Image 1 (cartoon, helix red, strand yellow):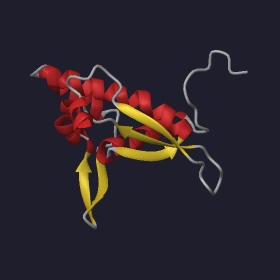
Image 2 (spheres, rainbow, N blue to C red):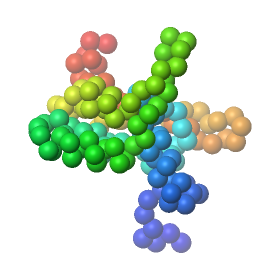
Image 3 (tube, helix red, strand yellow):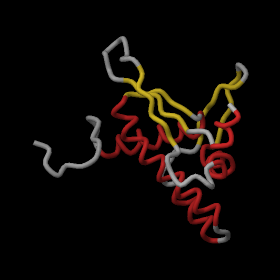
Image 4 (tube, rainbow, N blue to C red):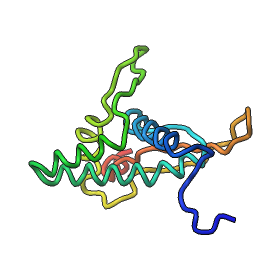
Amino acid sequence: MRHKVSGWHLSRNSAQRTALRKNLIGDLFAHGEIVTTEAKARMLRPAAERIITIAKRGLAKGGSSAVHARRLVAARIFRDRVVEEDAAYVEVDALKKLFDEIAPRFAERPGGYTRLIKLPRRQGDNAKMALVQLVETASEEATS
């Protein structure tokens, strides 16, 4: 029985779970959305939302608070990501993108920065799949 056993173990040891979480969060910030299994998506969503909140706090205050927020976030994600743009591969710094684009976009939003959409099961192993994406701001949704 799993009494009082919290968190998602994902059939991995703690170091592998940490590396997986850092990679998924970095990819989410670099690409804006990722397709993964539903269990990984449910593990990823609260962690990503906490990181965006920390980044927002770093934007609101200047000086040492901003530096502290960057260091906290840098410890929780892998920064360098490779993204395909216009048939070429471009290296993206996920930390820079988070503080320059994503956190200011959600500055007025009190929470709920990600959306989880269930997808059809994967053909090879019948795993439940999900799409995790960053939501748009209210003004962008109104114009769409």
